[in-house]
Length: 381
Image (cartoon, rainbow, N blue to C red):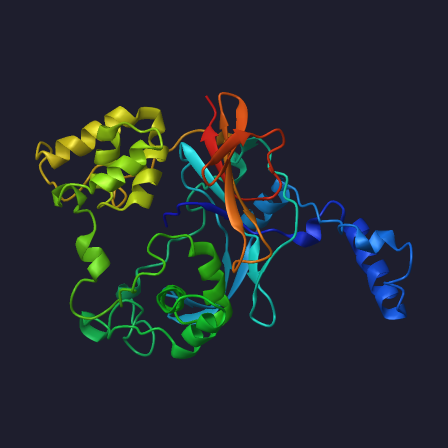
């Protein structure tokens, strides 16, 4: 599947200073139980606690580690069983966005943020997680509609005789739990549908991974039924739509892009400014050629105008190249959880780190490379 970011879990148990952190927490627990926490001269408890330090390599190894999946439905066997899951990267994009997943759901279903340091290197090599395809001795699972499927002919994609299934509705109890945590109703419904109504915990994890999506709070499209879903029906039609909103063009231009580049990006992405910005950054190496392609399709010079080459909904192959990158941007969150705080950005321009805090821009002497939420890497020359 296609992903916009490389999501990395933070294995706190693999912190390089785990013994020090555990010792400090045990000392604090003992003093709290003995009533000494308010004693005079107790400076160690008043000072900032030691944060776990988890290396980037540990996060990448956790991403690549094998995972056991219970109740996996095999279309080859026609039943559920235990399966092994392994994540790999099929392609290495020119711009690699890395998401350090600091947010999680506590046992009481409240959103929390990991207070942990993840020192991100300014140069990385992710070739170790490049996928190699199907290994010798392995076979690809047959499509779901090629089997009898679940429940005697009602597979995941269609009913008996190829009839489409009834629309899948989001589980009301899962939606209610997510809404009680402070998330929007539409976002909660999207999470329930995206995780197949499996569990509230799984839906909450999906929320934290996708809460920054531009369409997170939009009404979800219910899949199934006789017709094509709204999202699918409108996919790839950006080249034939109306002219992009001038305000969106101006906003992209204020980020440093030429007006014609901004216009082409909005055309390729159906006017969605967030996707258009991603489109521009991901094609920075040869932006003029990508823009020329979009303009050619928009002018009807490439035949089928419903398929924008290189667009966000294109069925073409993703760009690929060496997996060595240099860090140039960091987005960090100041605050204890998702319900409060403030986001700032640090960008490296001509060898100098700058901080962007709302309208304030200044030189940053020590960018928080270990406290970021999103990291942006550019392929090394």
